[in-house]
Every structure is written in C-alpha cells, then in structure tokens.
Image (cartoon, rainbow, N blue to C red; front, top):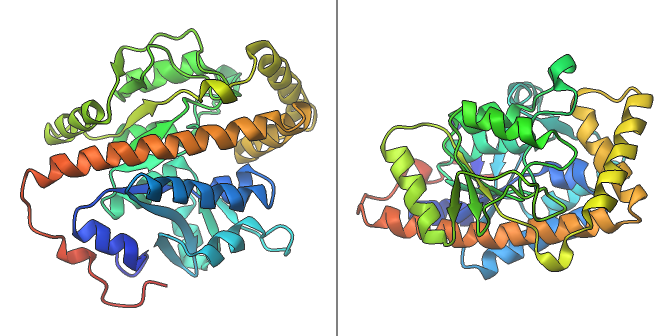
Length: 326
C-alpha cells in the first residue's frame, strides 16, 4: 500500500497524534466548478476546517500516488488543467488502479475519496452532495458508485444530501437497503442540496457533533462496516427557491438527454448547465453549502477524535514517513 500512498507531513503528524482530520474530495476542483472559483473554493474549505481546529486532507492522484493532503500548487494544478490543455481523470473505485498504474492525474469522487481516506484511517469526509440513483435509473441502471461505497467503507460523509439532479426518494431507499444510516444534522428531513428540505423524512436526527461521533463509534465497534451520511442542510441565507431550482433542473436534464450525455459526464454537465440557467446562483449556493459542510465536519472530527482518545491506544507507527511524501 505504501508504494501508492503519500501522506502530507501535516496530515501524517495529526493522524499519528490522533487529532481531528477531515478528508476532502478533488473532483469539485477539476470537474465541479469553473476556474478560478474551483481553486478559491478548495482553499476556502481547507481554511474553514483549519479554523475549526482540524487538519484538512484534500485527496487526489498525482504522479502515480494517492496524495492525502495537497499543496497550494497542487490545487492550482488540478483546477486550471483545462486551460493548460491537461486532462485530469475523474476517479471512482474502478478508475483508481488505472490512474495509479498509468501515472495519470486524477481527481477523486466521493467513492474514491472514501477509499483513500479509509486507507489513511481518516474517519470524516466533507463534500457538497453525494451521488445517488439517477432519474430514469429504472431503464438506464445509472446508480452512482458512491452508494455502494457508503455501504462498505468506514468513512462518515458530511454533505447537503444527494445532488438535487438525482432521484432523491430512490437514493434514500437504496441507502436504507444497504444499511447506511442517514443522519439529519439539525433536521428531520433529507436536505435537497440547493434547498433545505425535500419532503423526505429521515429515521434519525442528530443535533450535536458529539451525538454523531457516538453513533459512528458504536457502528464501527459493532463491526457494522460501511459509512454514514450526515445530511447537513444548506444555510438558510444561501438556499434557493424550490420552484426555481426544479425548473432549472428539468431544463438541464432535457438538454443532457438531447445531447446524449451519459455516464460519469452527466453530473459535471448538469452542474455546469445549472450554473448557466440560474445565472450563477447555483454556483454560489454550492460554495456556501460546501463551506458549511466543512465546518460541521471539523466539529464532528474533533468529537470523534476525543472519543478515540478515551481508548488510550498507542500512536500509529505505520503512518510515519519512510520516504518523501510527494
């Protein structure tokens, strides 16, 4: 594993000391937002986590290695790739070995970020929204790999629910079938990404980081493998009007269908088209919600680190650096 895993010294030190660390994905940089807002947002998320007293660990594949923690130059490298004529692969579970073997640059999706975070023993991950069951999946079978990763990989994902372009009721049903807890953070309903509610009631609600941490510890100590979704609504001040969002999504989906957009290209296309149709409002909402998720994730990572410290386990010697991390 160490041939492929490169942990930034700051992150490695925090993990050894069992301090709070929050994983971050990189597709939001390379495929989720336009330049330079993508890089600005990545920096903002890292700063928000640091302000919350935790260490950020943005994850990507660079130079044939999984990088746990990126430099500012790395963020710029990923974010400005299109302008410089460089391709950055969008990496899910199936793509990780290809990127590593070919030494391709790759940005990690929710699924791939969970895998990499688990390798580094990072328990908490902040993102915008998870993937899920796509609309029309009954005929296309288009279901994000994020959902099966949540069922098998022990990482908690703080998000504003699933992306609003998806079939939210089917996504929740799929997660229930796979035994993934969906914890409403200060809410009884599933957030709908750009809006605070979806009308979908959740079975569990948490109103504090400590409660989330206790649930995670109980789950994993029982050997119940898999992650959890911490569904954190977008701040009220940044939420969009539901009818406005629904109309824009319907138009974006129709455009994707007309242009034959398929597979992993669907989500980046729809997010870009929504930005156009909403006059940039969807992008501003996206930035607000990812920052909010980063802040909540930092507080949960702190609470979980405090619980872990109660076990008085020794440091993690396998996380010490025996070769340059870069």
